[in-house]
Length: 224
Image (cartoon, rainbow, N blue to C red; front, side, top):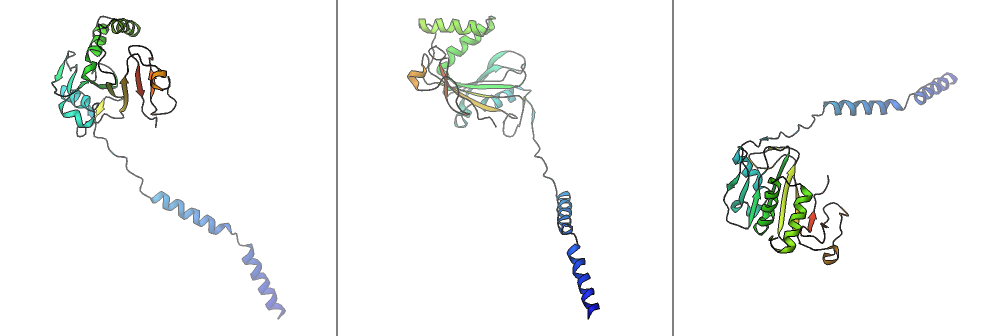
């Protein structure tokens, strides 16, 4: 009887001394092995190519326009030969400005046709060698004098831009490009619009160059 008691006691002690972590270690080991054997997600392949033809310049420039209007937009800009030309005629209210193939990155724009005198004047002054401040001052003077047509109040400019200069020829989307929107309100101020003079949150509208010919509402993209 005493011998049975001793055997039972030793058996109980043996069980109680077994490391409880063994089961945990086994579980972790199994989890790690399962994780190692799991198939890692395959990154999606991008079917992007260089923007290296007039057709590609037109296709990507149109992406700056509202989707419903792209079919009838006029497209202007530098062609692959370096000439500033009309790349495609259009019939609606938008003019798209293609990316300059000689510059790094990508930047296309689409603006309401009533803004064309203002935009064209800027390009003309830039071609004359005027810098940003000089262009601003000249157009400010001309707008105040009434000799520069600033277009319709509320006319928009859509900018499609990014660091890459490649695109998907199936969708015409430029790799990593984003949108920025501008609404021109010549001589408007923070007081006349109720807008702040600097952005207070991502994607929040604000007024830039208030009180000048170039006053405009800015809507920048959300930073991801």
